[in-house]
Image (cartoon, rainbow, N blue to C red):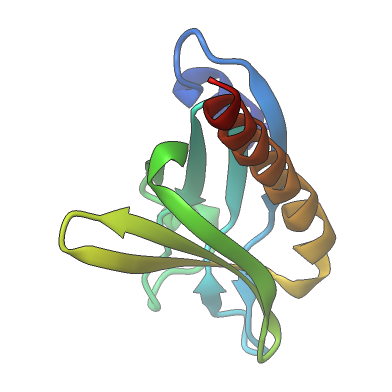
Length: 138
């Protein structure tokens, strides 16, 4: 419910939501948070990544969550992406066109959510393919 409300608040105005997925926080054996809960939204022109702010190590319980981190990622800057696993985490690696070269942004999520993240990112791939075909046709 929390992420659904944030989707409504942070979805870029005038853009349709094409795909979305969310995942819970990753906790270790001592219930310490290794990576925060998050969500991935795909629109026609950008990715929106929503993550809870990671709780400090000394906190216990949800009351210690202070806010969220919202990242808008223009699809025009996306060179490539890869969804895979590293150790026991799922990883979404975004490769970025930047003015000073390329960069890589990694998003961690629980490995059992890899299928849902892959499905959302395939929507991005189809958008970029359609965009490239339209550019060639023009």
